[in-house]
Amino acid sequence: DGGITQSPKYLFRKEGQNVTLSCEQNLNHDAMYWYRQDPGQGLRLIYYSQIVNDFQKGDIAEGYSVSREKKESFPLTVTSAQKNPTAFYLCASSPEKEGPGQPQHFGDGTRLSIL
Amino acid sequence: AQKITQTQPGMFVQEKEAVTLDCTYDTSDQSYGLFWYKQPSSGEMIFLIYQGSYDEQNATEGRYSLNFQKARKSANLVISASQLGDSAMYFCAMRVLGNQGGKLIFGQGTELSVKP
Image (tube, rainbow over all chains, first blue to last red; front, side, top):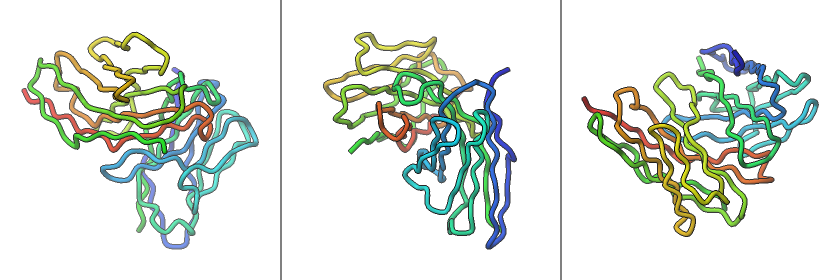
């Protein structure tokens, strides 16, 4: 079945440590996105990528980095510069680069906590 | 500014009854899409229904329908014949052509509880 796989499901970060969240899709979608969700809140865009080897900052990119070396993969690194990383992280993809008509498909998310 | 507003933090509905979840949006763009997603306690975001800004008919998908009133900038979700499995968070979202790669702008969500 086609879909988006995020791993790990739960992740713990120590002070000063960088951690990487994995996102893989086999939907052949061009566009991929990373969102952050805080308790009781909607999702906010961290980074997005419309094609391989290109990505753009979203609304809350500080303290995060991404790469897009393959169409299927869009990993997110939470760096030590992100002072409040505890949140639920969701990866999404969409077949259209920017068209408003296509829904985004989401992975099951990664819950990140600090130790 | 582009914004989604959901004014109902929590809603209760009796099983088998219908319920309306409110959503208003703000954008000056003419081309946009409106979406509703369901988020169960497990966390995944499940796409429910879509309405395009140029669509004249209200969207329907099974028990879900979207009451689209463009002049009022509202896109309310109607769930008919509620089931216990409908208990979840519901998010209204908007996608605007050309806006940061087509990102989704989300509201704060409404927590729906279905009572037996």
